[in-house]
Image (cartoon, rainbow, N blue to C red):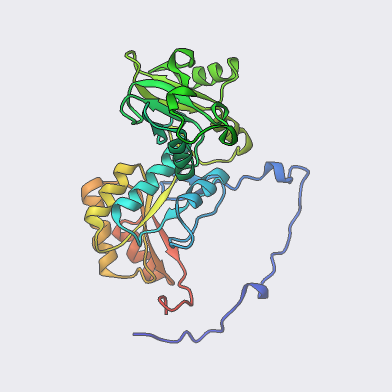
Length: 320
């Protein structure tokens, strides 16, 4: 049952932080905004922390893959919205994880019989200018050559020109063998002034790419939030209806943390969802719950197994 709180309401503008003494060590360069995301035992390192305390709302208008990449670059975490089919949400997570992976699986691939028109269409669709030409047109086929924006001029070439006429053939492509470390791959890129280095199996099949831009990106974004495989950290929302299918798909896609997306989290439904995740995955899957507005709701979700609890219910129509 709803009830009124008898005490007065307050706004942030009614409070003032009184500054204390500042030593010569109190300078911006010495400030750390690193913030734990999930619960942890005193004296232990949290399993997941952010470099800046910033997350995004689990909303379609806010948290897609672009927000996932943008926030991870700055040191925060985006939670990919749940109001979409499971496969599409999992693919968004997968694309964020692959965006900055050091070794990137190629998603821009051509066949030897494709044309300049196909190159331009693929670039429009993926936004990538480096494309692998493989025997089967996949990112794991036998590498036949590379196409980059330096290999063609749209204003001077017929769109029907075959790829084989302007690609860089594999014989002239500098590559590295599967198993090469990321450090060695970056050294090869710098030594040979490359933008991309294909990684191949011993029989010449494409495994992945290492890109110069990823190295530069890390230098430009020193607070970027990476997992143990140097991939961007990203979260995803789940609900209390299809979690038995959605959670495994997101875990398989590489998601780092989940959150139950609801305007009111103090419910049996969230407790059931948390129990199912704990029974199936133990503590290996990090999941938050919410939202709640009081200590009673917080304690309920904490006791149910939530790794963190979202606080606060807004004034929008669904929340009301």
